[in-house]
Length: 282
Length: 197
Image (cartoon, rainbow over all chains, first blue to last red; front, side):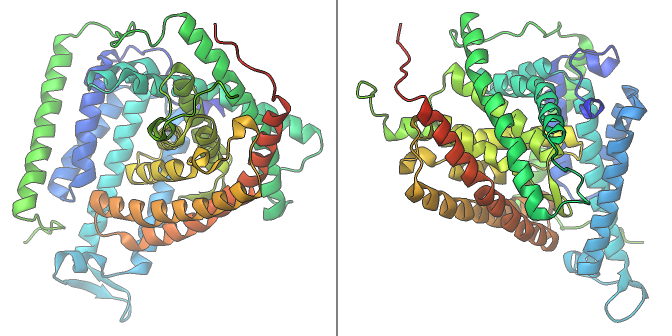
């Protein structure tokens, strides 16, 4: 279970991991904006390739992320299948044209527009997924907080993010402990042997001690932070932040350029709407 | 209790931004994320019968609606990180609204910290839970999905319907007993006062 918590708590030594939090957050936000809004395969595919290169460059521990990747591929294939079953002509509706490749019957038609739509959708989701994977694998909670602070977010919000992320392993431990204790008292947690109603009741029986345990610690942690002078100043600096290097500046300029390109794309889209789906003409 | 000033409307809405609230939101978000990933009972693709929605209720009861909304939003982002299925901000923002609406507890006199939670508050809570979930997942999330991902309303609607039913029923079936139990627990501690300096 602990193996599934992929966020590192100490910075690694690969190139991407040595960049400052500010650089990584800016780069990630820019990449995410582009991948979220555009539905154009000419933009999505290079984006996906770039994200994959970044992911490979930190040489992730494959055993740790294998499960996530398999899960992701399976869910998305099922999703695509559901889409196709729900509306086989979805791409044609978006593109406004229909080019039938072959028909199964009147309802199930394979059109080239739908295939392009699925290609765009898959590369979009894969791009977002790969981007969040390298981001999660290369940033520590404190770096994330300092990166968000560099975007001029209030530092109390940044504290919430880093504190919350750092507290997750503790909650996982408490959750496992509560579950084991309940099982020792004879609670049957095997989903095959219990009905839905019984499982709901069990869930609340595990939930109550977990909630009490968590919220009783709030006072302790808050006092400890206040004793160390938290929340006195208007600004905050971050101990974890390394010096800005030339690589950081290059990456930040690249992120800015990507973001400006994204802004230009959105703004021009307001006046001349972009086609909802890009279909190459041969 | 008479010496405690009655808080203004705005202060109740926004919550007090002291260290207690910050830690409360952070821990609440962490709990939300963990429950969403590990304690769910799958119903539909990407949708689970998850007990995590109890967390914003508690955060709302202790710190106010805006912290509750933030806890739900951050919690969903943490869950996306933990589960590793990519970021889905359409759902996270929808969850912000759920947290906010469900966390309105102090507005209708349900003061868990003072042990006040009766039948009247329970009924208002149940109605708000359904309205809040229906508004957020039934309206906000599909709109944002349309904005971010374009033209895939069918699946989102199907997911949203499953989510509205499962989330609001969890909020009521699991949430109400926990709220009653919490109120009873705080009621027992009545009479203790925190000394100011």
